[in-house]
Length: 266
Image 1 (cartoon, rainbow, N blue to C red):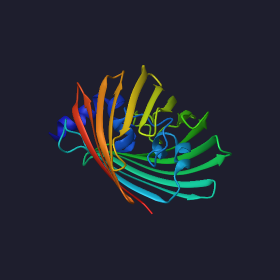
Image 2 (image 1 turned 60 degrees about the horizontal axis):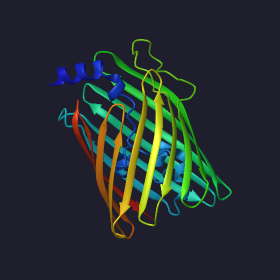
Image 3 (image 1 turned 30 degrees about the vertical axis):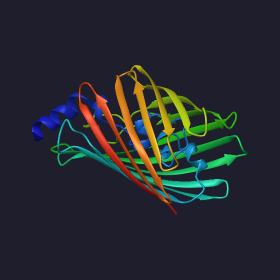
Image 4 (image 1 turned 180 degrees about the vertical axis):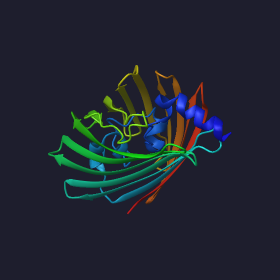
């Protein structure tokens, strides 16, 4: 099984490497975070953390069911101070013979009531058994603009300078992506989001998601993405300062990937 894991990762880096954990809420909405405000926007568009009013911490765990040994663990934290916001993130993906670690530090700022900007600096580490380890750095930039209370537009550029790992023996690159998205608050209960994403050397992906707040305590979510075609679903519970979110992703080639997130707003 361990040999199969290594071969699987080696043959499909486009799918396995650089999959940011966006938290269960954004994942359940079809991985739509470019124009959605959330603590996990730290990974999808750092300017999206500017809606948070209190320091917030969230943990996330993903089990990749095509292999019992492969999982993702992630953590995000955001601290607001006036119109400025500081964030930190950590993510680990893989198993004993192959693992990726990413640490990020973000700064976002509100420029008036409509425009927000965000910057995320990331430190990457990749370790492959028998090949050793390599490190790299990348910078992400995001912009969020609120045309109105209902309509929001976002742009997110990841690793715009196309930084690579330091080791010449590891050919996997740090992904570069361009993302444009919009969200529409149809009512005080329904949020619809969509985005268009393009990774270098990959097809354009279009996704659509919805968040339906049935009651103040419970939200239901769903989404779709085109390339590759995936289906998403999940729900969230919001009780006082505690947040519990669950989601699952279905890919025809790799099956289901359930995840759970626990958050606390101080």
